[in-house]
Length: 569
Image (cartoon, rainbow, N blue to C red):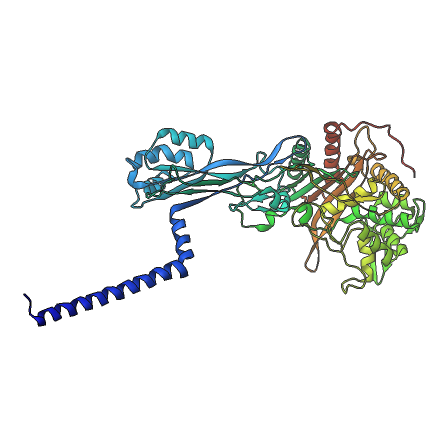
């Protein structure tokens, strides 16, 4: 038997042990309470992340189609190729087979395939045909991952009107930029349990939120018209050795753009130029001084206000004095007594200055504002510019501007503003809002764009009178713009290009704007050629292009010939 002292010693040790275990139990209980009550939600969320997989399912971006059904932009699957070098059996033999398919140098590819690395990216944007060929090799260590990419079947033919989509699937410029939010759709997601090896658990929880694909757009563009415009502008720039150019075809009755092309353009599938201005849409973003085509706007305003008629006589001395500035004609000649019809046909700067002078500044600039100059028209294309129009009282305007603006100098417009304003004359004096999307098609159905009149700028009578004068101008000023079987109403322009301190001594912008059939117009066309080196007048550069475009449009759009009438003089 143990003596009494030994028993007391054992009892003390047991008591200490019990106290220690009790303390540990209290600590554990406290920790459990802290984990469950204080950090319970946080820990549960962490556990959920370890056992659940969330996979984003990207939506397909909506397609863009011409009104005759041709796809202009759409999504397709391409593939990213990568490699696990440790799994490659013979990197040099594989490099020999692979490098011609992915556009990488053989030596660089062999170096990547034999690198001391777990993973090596090799190429992106591989088309399905090549991806299928690589897959058929069943080569260990090669991996192909699908991804959505934007494709433009016609390349840059409809650029920069369409715009482009970057790697983050965001649209920029043109239609892609303006309609980005409805084209992109909404991404979906797949949620499922993972097993202990990090793989999808076969009997685990699973849920799917499918993506909502973007809406499709049907444009007002006709693909046949678009191709023809591209060909004619390309050939025209080559023939006249010009730097750039734009052609727009507008339906003046609705404001719909039937075709629009600018060159040079870019490839929307490879937008890697550092020149940001290249991606802008010249139709709506680039401003220029229009020159003599602007005289039809000035004359229409004078006719509508009643300050002149086609037969009003102006004595042209070859110079017109305004606030100390002397306005001279393009030919530096004096033409003596001339009617307003002759002023337009002869394209006299002095006569246009006279019309703006008798209108007065307030009325003149009110008409220009109503025609849409100096502010955006609201077209459904991204980055539309306002143009640049000085007006009395803004601190920049001088009395001499009233004269120079009358013949398109000292005022900046966009090509779309110019063709839309002349389109108003073709449409009985009513300015229409230009638009390029005809239909939006999504899961809810089809939404059509309704033509939108902006305002009655001049009376139908004034519009009809200026049309007669424009027909006369084509017949007298430039035979090169005529279209066999149709009367054409139009006007040439030869504009100087402003530079710091004045105007460029030789470079010009040649243009022609007109519509036909003159008495019942179906199309309004603007041809603009920048810095031609072979030809220095709108009549010899832009007018012939207009004639060819109009003649081909008559066939493509089925515009019926009309009995040719003589314009009133």
